[in-house]
Image (cartoon, rainbow, N blue to C red; front, side, top):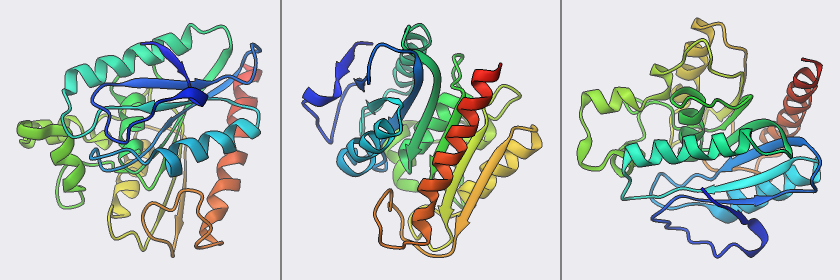
Amino acid sequence: MTFLPLKTANWSDFPTEMHFFVDFIDDSPRPFLLICPGGGYDHLAFEKEGKTIASWLKKLGYHVGVLAYPVQKIQANTFMQNLENIMTELRNHAAVSQIFVIGFSAGAHTAGLIGTKITTKPDGLLLCYPVVTFCPPYSHEGSVKNFLGKDINEATRHDFSIEQNVSADTPPCFIWHTMADQSVPVENSLMFAHALHQKNIPCELHLFPEGRHGLALLNEVPHTLQWQRLAENWLEEMTKRGNEK
């Protein structure tokens, strides 16, 4: 998997292959934030949930990267192997001291797959209004159909439901959702938090009463936007703990 510069990215909202765009502040070892935009596995919300998020996190002093993963026509095995390759490459990079993955909606599902189903785990996950389960009644069926395609059955739904894949080596998580989300039910976040709790995985969960799906850093509901500050605090604490090890 080749690292491509984020500044010169020839971006497509409908990628057919996985690409990885990075922006390193310098050559110094720093925590790296891998960003997974959402879009229901139908498209990628690159500007709102990719580029804007990268700008925010880079200003905080983190190296950043935006994942352009294939949508609509997805080969699950290839998808998972590419995620593994990216994580391995990041772990071996001299300028990467820790890895955190932040995802939005279906991108949070991708982040969850990284945190639960591949060998090279990140140091933490930040899941924003995440698609978690592929199993009814709380599944986001658009994401399910676009990810699994013709392979939708009870077994594959279960296999790619991230709450079903939590284990003792799943990293700590920060999760937020709104109760008013009409696209991805808040039960997705509740199910994942419960699965983490069952395995004694540290989890910080924030539920807000107002706000539509897909807010990201939009200031439509100022009270809900406090998730940004809360996430900054969580990241600061997690990186501090990592440095103390």
